[in-house]
Length: 156
Image (cartoon, rainbow, N blue to C red):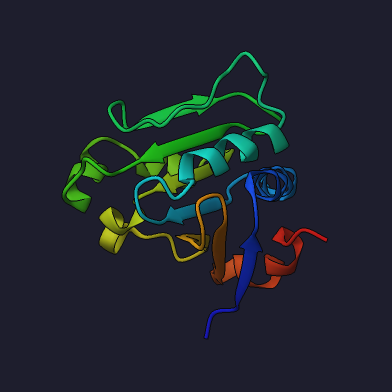
């Protein structure tokens, strides 16, 4: 069984605060997978994670839907992947994305279901669901070495 926690995000400010906390808590080699419907806030959460990693304000974090990967400097590098356009793990392997999955920074992956067999055994999965126009529910599930660290990812 993998530890899991339900976290209500009642407004954009609470989502931003949660993301900043995630970024501040992240360590080199961590992997966060973000799932949720289009518009559920995956990229918005990643922007706040970047703030928590001290990504410079001049580096605006955008969705890498068409470029597939954006890299940002910070306390540790932020590797932001969007796998929406990919259809198989073989495509991911051919692009060399595995190098980033176990790199020296934090890897945030949108649409991680595309990884299939390449899904990292150690990760924090964050599933965002709509609960209202500006509110979300985040389900956090920790896998592998991330499991004992789950409490550190929760805001106080």
